[in-house]
Length: 224
Image 1 (cartoon, rainbow, N blue to C red):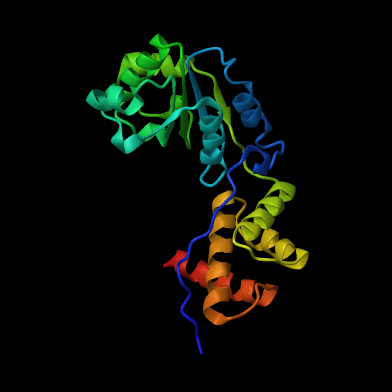
Image 2: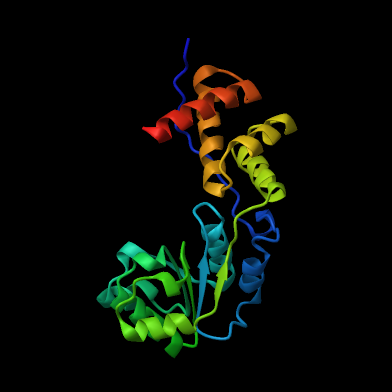
């Protein structure tokens, strides 16, 4: 009989010691660790979906006491209230924020001699910024990228994602997934989530045969 998996969620580790350091992300980690010795008020952190940008932002937020501000909630009139007395702020999906509000936030933190971490998939030079003052400030800010993972890092990420869900898997499965999935953190997250759900629903261990069936279903779904 097929079991109905309960959506209990899972807790992914977000501590600095839990972040996996590799050539593709060591420059970004070095910039996070360099704070508060940044050369200016802002740092832009960019990279593909699921690459660990938000994780690094949370690490920096915990160290700096920064206020997290959702890009969708950022409005110019609300900036003083959202920031409060803080001298640091972290904005994820920063390229989606209202330009006047982002400029206001930048200027306010610069006045306080504080810092702003902007996270997005693309660097500010590729954002469609119409406000000249904002564009000049962001283009002057240092930019650091999280690059695509190599086999060693992607394999370690898969192991961590399974461990976060309290799933014990073998190296045979990790090796199979490395060959079969897209070379991205987002694909690794999708595969692990789908395998976890299938394992619960079908009452099966997470093995290569299950992975073969699950990945086939994912490919069919993504083609639709």
